[in-house]
Image (cartoon, rainbow, N blue to C red):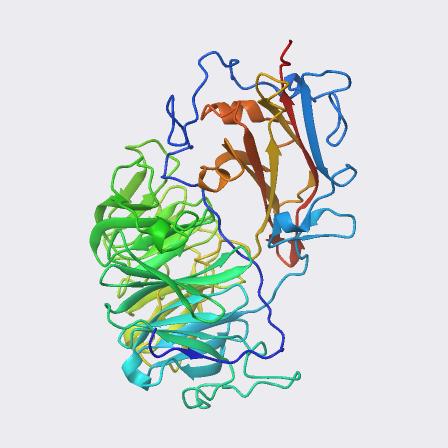
Length: 583
C-alpha cells in the first residue's frame, strides 16, 4: 500500500446517506435449492406436508391481527412476535442503515438530500471538475494525484453523500474528494479551504476536500470503480486491466483485499442485490461478483464459474456480441453497449439475453424509468424504449459530436460528455421517443472522460437510502416436538408509494450457519400484504422444517417530484406448527 495519502479527519460533520446493496446469494436463477442432502447436511423430508401455495384466508393466523396471539390453547402452535405492541420490542442492534422512531418502529430519514452535483474528469489535465447540475456551473476543480496531467483520471463513482472516487488509469491511483462543506481538512465549523472553480485549483494535498489517495501499483491501468454502502460502512471497488479487483475502505482508503476478476474490467455497476457487474473492453464477456459472499480474501479466493446456474461467488458469462459500457435498470436488468444487449437474470436459461444491432457503437449507457440512453460517439445520443429496445431514436442535435459517457441528474436531464470536443451537453429527454432535444451546453473541460457514474444514478437506482432489519426465529423445543414446520409470516407496516418494503428469508440448522445460507425472495410491499405463506416460500428449497430461519426486511424510500416518502415497519411475527412428542 505504498503512497497512501489520508486527509486527517476532524470532528467536523460527516454526512453519509445510507445506500447499500444486498444480494440474493448464489447465481442468477438460483433460489437456494438443495438436493436430498445439501452441503450443510440438511436432509429433505419426502413425507413433508404438501406445499402448494395457499390463499391468505387459509393460512394459520389469518383470523387474528399481526401481534395478536393466534395459538390460544393449541399446544402444537408456535408463535413469536417482535416490535411495537408486543412483549419483544425491536432491537436497534438488528437495524442497519435505518433507525427506531419514538414509537419503536423501524423507519428511515424522511428528509430528502439535495446535493445536485456532477463530477467530470479532465483526463488530459489530471484534474476533476465539480459542477452544480441545477445552475450547470463549474464550482470546483481538483488535481487527482501528485503528478498532475500524468495521472490521466478516467473513471468516477459518486457516493450517496456526493463525494467522488476517481480512478487514475496511468497513475494507478484511486483518490477521494468530499463534497463541501463536509471536508475533512476543517475544524470548528470553519469553511473549507477548497477550489471554487476552474481557475482556482490548489496544489496537490492543499485542498481541504481531498479525503485520501491510494496507489495500487504493480498491476494494470485502473479502468473501473464503484462505490458501495456495505451496511454502515462505505467501501469502493476498483478494477484494473490485468484482471485485478480491490475492495477498499471508503472512509480512509485502506485496502481490504485484492482478488482476481472473472473478466478483464473496463467498468462496474452494482445492482440493488449487491452484485458487482463487470464490463469488458470489447470482449464477448460479462463478469459478476456477489459482494455479499466475496467479503474478504479467503471468501473471494474461489473458482470462477461459467455455467448459467452454477452456485458461485464469481461468474463469467458469454455475451451475444462484443461489449463495452454497462448500466443497471430499475428492474435490475443489466445493459451492455457495443451493440445493445440486455441480460435478465430472472428469465429462464436460454431466454436471458436480448440483443439488437443499433447500427452504431454504444460506449456509455444510463437508464431511467422508461428509457435506455446510449453514447454513440459521432452518432450522438441514442434512446431505446426499455420494455422494447427495438423502438429507438437518435436525439436531435447530438450527432457529429464525440459522445462517450452519459448520466442523468435529479431533474431527469441527460448529461452527455463529448470527449474530443472538450464539452458536454444537457438533454431534455421529453416524454416521446422523438421528443428529446439539447437544452444546454457546458464547455471548458480538457479531454473529459467519464464512464457513466458521474452523478450517482448508475450505482444506486433510483434512491439513496436503504435500511435493513433482520430477525431470527428458532425451532420449537426439540425435546417436546417432532419438528417445526414454518407456516405464516405476518407484519404491521406502512409503505406509501413509491417507497416499499422488501422481504427475504433464509434457513439453516443453527444460527452460525445462517451467514452462509442463500436468501429466498418473498416479495415486496406494496403489493405483497400480510399474511404471507412462509411455508410455500421455504418449501421451494425444502426448508419448511429447518431449525432456524432469519427474516430480512429492506426499507427503501421513494421520491415523487419534491415529495419524499419512507416506509415504516411496526411489527413482525411468525407462526409455526409443532407436533408434540407423546410419551
